[in-house]
Image 1 (cartoon, rainbow, N blue to C red):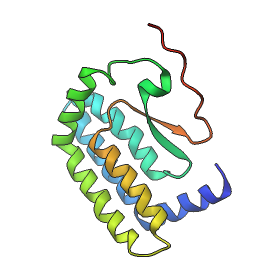
Image 2 (spheres, one colour; image 1 turned 90 degrees about the vertical axis):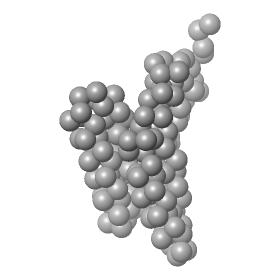
Image 3 (cartoon, helix red, strand yellow; image 1 turned 45 degrees about the vertical axis):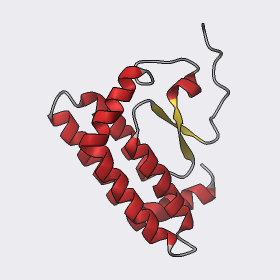
Image 4 (cartoon, rainbow, N blue to C red; image 1 turned 180 degrees about the vertical axis):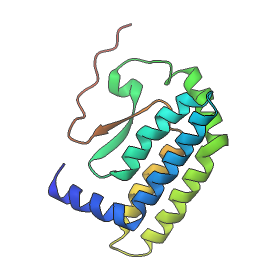
Length: 145
């Protein structure tokens, strides 16, 4: 993580990043309590960590990143994302969108607004994504057909 990314993450935490990460943790805990929501809880905990420190990391599709499909990137992943969208995704995405609009009003807040827009899109469809550092984006492994 570069010094600029560190400063952006520090400012992010102070200006609402911690609260949004807490929202993701609350969604994950609710999913764990239901027992059947444990697969969604794992994704929510991963994204909570990403929401706490978004600068220097990127959400990518797991099948593009790993070079092969798995259970989260196939048809079951689509069903899982639809369930997530109905149960928790819409209110997390709405929270990120509201904060993005608030931050976009000022020039200084534009990087934070952009991060909130990326997180809002991720909140709608999180299953099948991997959070990786920006400097660790190797070429995907060759597909085995």
